[in-house]
Amino acid sequence: MIDETLADAEEQMKRSVDATSEDFATVRTGRANPALYSKVLVDYYGSPTPLQQLASFNTPDARTILITPYDVSAMREIEKALSDSEIGANPSNDGKQIRITMPDLTEERRKEYVKLVKSKGEDHKVSVRNARRKAKEAIDKAVKDGEIGEDDGDRGLKELDALTKKYTDRIDEMTKNKEAELLEV
Image 1 (cartoon, rainbow, N blue to C red):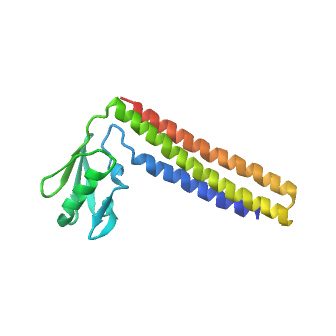
Image 2 (image 1 turned 135 degrees about the vertical axis):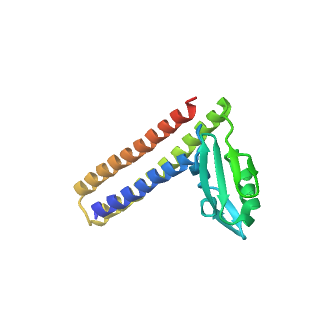
């Protein structure tokens, strides 16, 4: 019973770490990266559709991304979604593809990105702690109901705390690495 609860909690914590990694990939560093646009949604025939389902990406150099829509009629909607995104890109359209030249990051913009990364990291640590809280409640209930002994419950809680520390530390490390990457000139 404890092992199942711990396995479920660990699975949720792993998903939080994976989500952290995905979120951090969308935060811009000095290089052009198609992952920046993984969260951009385009209003495609009335439904929000991820940009990566509507176009192919190419990075001919370190600061340029070429976006080639599969459906040329969606070009205007794609361009609008890119302009409205929080990435701060100015798309230019040649009729067949959209070119985005990434501007150099200013010191001020880098600091904004660092704040954003810290905020996203903290949000994901909260989800890890929520998984811990849910598992702790399940273990406490099992002890109270007499399904498991108090010693087993204490052992389970110690293992749960170790898991929580492991995953929050991993998110902290990812946050620190991303900050260093952002501040690198």
